[in-house]
Amino acid sequence: MKKKLCVLIFVSLLCFLFTSCDEVLSVVTVNKSGEKVVNNYVSLFSNDFYEKNVSLRTWRKASVFDEEPLADFADRKDLLFKIENKKENVVVLGDEEGAIEIVFFDGGYKCTIYTSM
Image 1 (cartoon, rainbow, N blue to C red):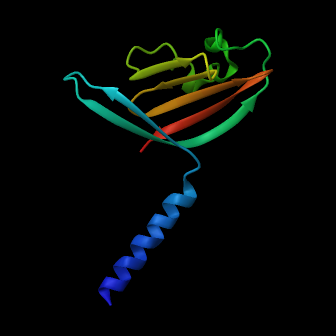
Image 2 (cartoon, rainbow, N blue to C red; image 1 turned 90 degrees about the vertical axis):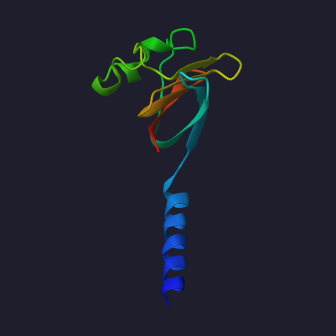
């Protein structure tokens, strides 16, 4: 009976995990000792912004960085990674606690905010 209950609880938690996560972002970085570290993030919020004057070259001027929690995120010194992919029009920034992904399209961008697992 205990075995069936444990299996039922495990399956329920697994189903909850797969239905609650919209997107998962995984980034491999190198720590100070040279070892590879996998950083996993789960999406919290995603929204489309329609600003014609913001592009891959001027992504720091995006209105998403005007709000208080993200105001200094792009200029922080303790970021683990800052990826600018010109081919796919994507900018990804992250630290231990969270990450931001900005995907540019004609006339705007889609911003997704992630939190660390």
